[in-house]
Figure 1 (tube, rainbow, N blue to C red):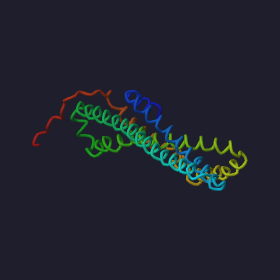
Figure 2 (cartoon, rainbow, N blue to C red):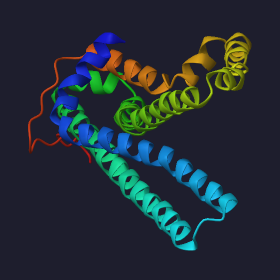
Figure 3 (cartoon, rainbow, N blue to C red):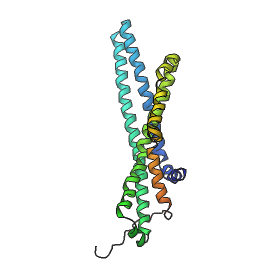
Figure 4 (tube, rainbow, N blue to C red):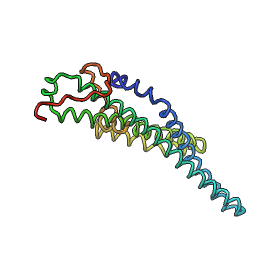
Length: 222
């Protein structure tokens, strides 16, 4: 698996700027989503204290503004990360197709077309899912969980521990009941497994390099 992931690093390096921008947008979007409940707290406290309507209106405008900002950052997050993943997928497809063109005809005749098409479509789409949506949702969920727990502990550590206490037996029961596969799904390792499978197949072929403009030779009778 490490070897398969190492083969992906050059492609990630070429799109490091949109990836970094997407991760920064995740940070801002998560921070905004965690600030909004605090503003709602001020609204409720203001209603209980009978504060001026103008102040409550400011709170309402702030909540709306945060919602708009959250939407903007989440839009940028998706466009940057998913756009970077599609760029990686495009480069992989180009190089994989160029590699297929250089293979001898005996290899193409010995392997089923459906298997080759599956590697070109399903496996490469799994790579895109790993470096795009999987990374996006994992980073967003992990960051939100850590920051939310930290805020909860700052408010009341004992109550936070009581709230999180049922989580650990539930995770243990899930791992015992469903085995390692369920735990892998829980940790978002399925896309990594897909890429490992793809990398294992490609690693057994000749080194990949692209030749722009090259086309497959037409077979007789086609």
